[in-house]
Image 1 (cartoon, rainbow, N blue to C red):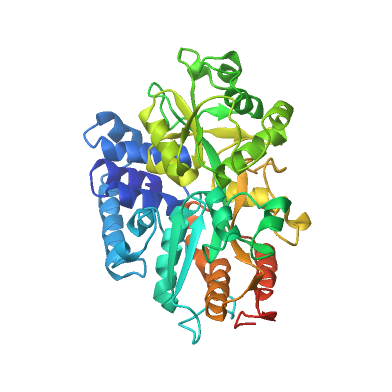
Image 2 (cartoon, rainbow, N blue to C red; image 1 turned 45 degrees about the vertical axis):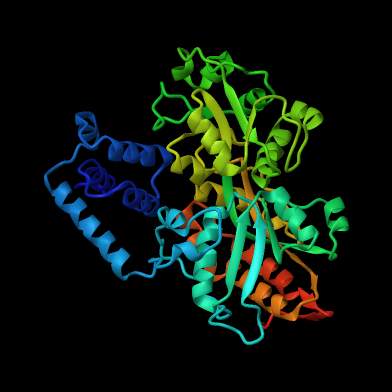
Length: 451
């Protein structure tokens, strides 16, 4: 019996599927990062005898099955709801086609009877937002879809979480976006009063590296101690004994480590350094936690795209990005040892496991963090990403449009999360988010035109 992986591998090495199709199908099958990396490598090396041997098809039926898969995928592109006719219309740093390349609908649908459907009289036809790059791939897809549903155009600029907090705080956008919650001082200084945090997705921040000597299908293993040591500038060589202990393949890599970090204010950074502070007393005391910090070592890149770009361009480098950015650039993605002592690859399921560990104790204001979660299967560098909205607004049309958009994001829009590498928000947290959305007011009165 030929496995679905073998079918996909056969389609990759014979050119019956391109990289875009292979990656979409790999996500749908829930394949591991090493398996996805092997498939992408096969796409790049169609004539390799070794690649053909790796697939080990049991019979010639695998080629026929793979061809059938391609035909199915082509039919989906022609007839399915996933088609994007005018991606250039979305004003975002990431093209919708780029997001769509990583999308495969996993069949999940929101089952509530409180869906946002169609335009609404009296709402603004545009919303402007800015902030986190961590969920920018997801937001590109979401806001294109939302315009098709309601006619409301959502313009989003991925300028980093620090920029998102600043933009909502001074009122230059209708909503902000961040992966690091605003602190009490930031909330107090916001020009329009209290700001709600609406969690709309969860994701993993992953260690990503470029070591050309190694096969990225065999991920490196990192512990709390080695990651903190690298970013503190205390572990400077790839063949440092602390790294070799968990990665014997590094013993002959006699190269200096080039550390890459974010140069802008970033929620991705917040999640990363929040984890380092949770596991390293030295980091907590000397560097601390924030959307930007004084880095002990390394070079900076602007946005997730910038960090991924620096890692691509510099061999023997290490950085941290949201999972999709590492996959897009064919970079190695490391396993990280969690609190239970298990080395865990980042995935939607391991992020969900991290959130589940905190579900019973979540802050009603939903500003909680979920790094270094307990549990056998929790990926330890996980976090929420939030949309930021004022509790009290002064524009009725904007208020109606914003609350409807936020409601859609925590309900119907969740169908896209898994296919783009993000975890869906657990139902019990969605219920709390709905309560916050219903508390958004204009002139002292709730403005959401729903429940």
